[in-house]
Image 1: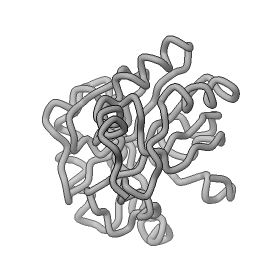
Image 2: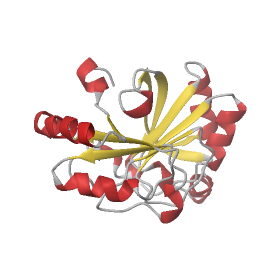
Image 3: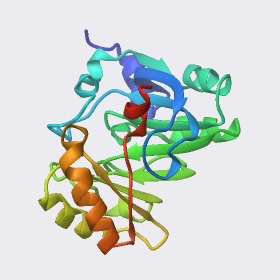
Length: 211
């Protein structure tokens, strides 16, 4: 069903966002593993990772446009940190929602492939590049964290190429793709011991059986 013109304008401005789901949980990956955070999963993605575990997020039309003010109101009841993920959140303007969040003293974190233009005000910017649709050059300098998913051996080479593009402040993580975690974790352990600028990220939320 097509959106009416007014709703479409609000979505274009980021005043409304196609909300797939929202939940309060323990962060499972990367630099903030083990910390409580409210997750906002925004619909819409055309990066097309074959191993994506939320393919239902790809079609933005399936997820109802929701007022950013309503989303922020829900977050303030539960947490002081929000992680905006997707889908691909930078397909939408993040300026309005992040300004509102920061006014409410909520720390703003994002996880993105970086394939779309930078928007928003972020306390933590996690960049997770994908071969299928590379980050825009402007995004690399924003990264506080580079999280590379390792699905096969050639991904180590890709990870190194991406690490050369981020700034010195950026923390570097290698994460095994879940369906190949036994084989890839062993390779990652060996790689990190030989290349200690990298750290290991695991999807601990899956081990803990939480969202």
